[in-house]
Length: 145
Image (cartoon, rainbow, N blue to C red; front, top):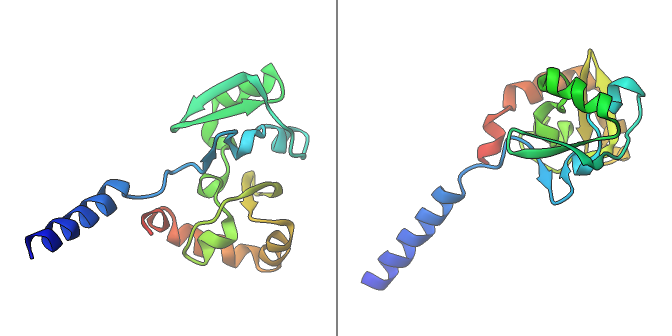
């Protein structure tokens, strides 16, 4: 009986320690899988960042295609980081998290949104305003799931 109690306690502690997902979706390649967050606004394209042009912010490494983009980010990082930390905007609107694809993006009202794929982005764009509103309600509580 004592052994079962100890195992149950360890499971509870493990779940508590794991806590919530990080605010920024991050991979070994960095935030946005190494894509430059400023480029979406400057060129309207997803551009791979250079590992020599990096900035740490909110526990993630961000990479930039140019020194100018790096300096722009440093001046106002909140303007350039994707909404919902780079998690799929559609998934967050449905109250769960899923990795955002840096190639499935939309800039709406000066904010960058990522989706899990081009197909999801197409579905998301059909009711974009409603999905954004739902995602804003779910964020950041969805990180605790």
